[in-house]
Length: 199
Image (cartoon, one colour):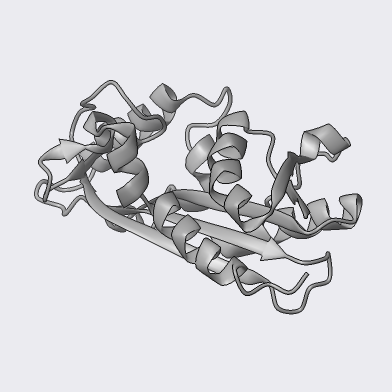
């Protein structure tokens, strides 16, 4: 069964394809079907993921999968949240986003808690108007450091500290990160639910 991924991220495609292949699903990136990226105007991860999945399903005529994820920092009222990828504006770079995050936190009173969590929402729709989409969520708690640490990972990984491990997400080996991460949790839950999907 063919399934369209509402993303043009090749790394994401490989990761998801390896997980879904044993279930008999074959993933195709939306760009290969000339489907443009959907607008993400909503203030929640789930609404943005649903918008992306529904557009991909509508324009392809296939079942669709989409995700939306980001970092939520408690002291910043949940920011950067759905704006995580573009927190520092254009041009979008991890370095600029991390610099803005650390600057925003440094401006708060000394001793302000730096608790945060990565959140991932993955949505599957059988068709564009599916009234019962499958939604899987993952959450990864941690804290924000005052300065980046570690050379692996991407995004906010170098400033996202895991107290129980004494490491940042950028200091974890890829396999361990994938096992613990918000996206890894959401994918595991999604796979369990997809096993029961009627095709």
